[in-house]
Length: 257
Image (cartoon, rainbow, N blue to C red; front, side, top):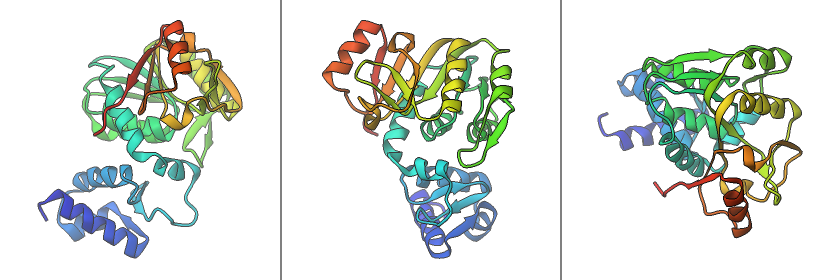
């Protein structure tokens, strides 16, 4: 089956009919490499046609999907556009800290084609994406308490390990941006990870779709003045644009794909 869209349509059909399919079985059934199937699953996942899980894919409405898998379906197209736009900010040889979230998962997929990056992350999915890509990447997954529903490491051990590094960039996903320009997230352990990454990076890039604009979350990560770049999918409200100008934060609005 040579035509990618025909193959992807067949993959979607098999996953919906069987509720779950492995990469190995899809590869054998469709007579293509497992790497081709992985790429197809990435595309179908970004479109919301299925949910990519470890070793394969499941139907979007499968009972028991974890929090991370459910979040990855929401605003999937917007997150892909943000990821493609953000990729242009980075170059071969850069060092990055990347936190865990569905938007940074999409970003990792886009960025992994840039060679020879050093990536330090608390996200199992981000680490796996760069590891599978090859391309001369150096991937460091920090330790700590494993939170299974979001596939990330958290806690004091993770914070201690992050403090050992100094990188060019921190790339973060968020819960919301308040009207005052404060960058927010919902869980204290995720906030602490984000703060540590900001402390040990020269530049900070926030990835946030339009639903996060002027939307408060529970806890503050940082002020807008600490953010180098904000990458989003729509023009933010004028009040937020003014805050970005005052803070010296570069606004990047992703183009439609």
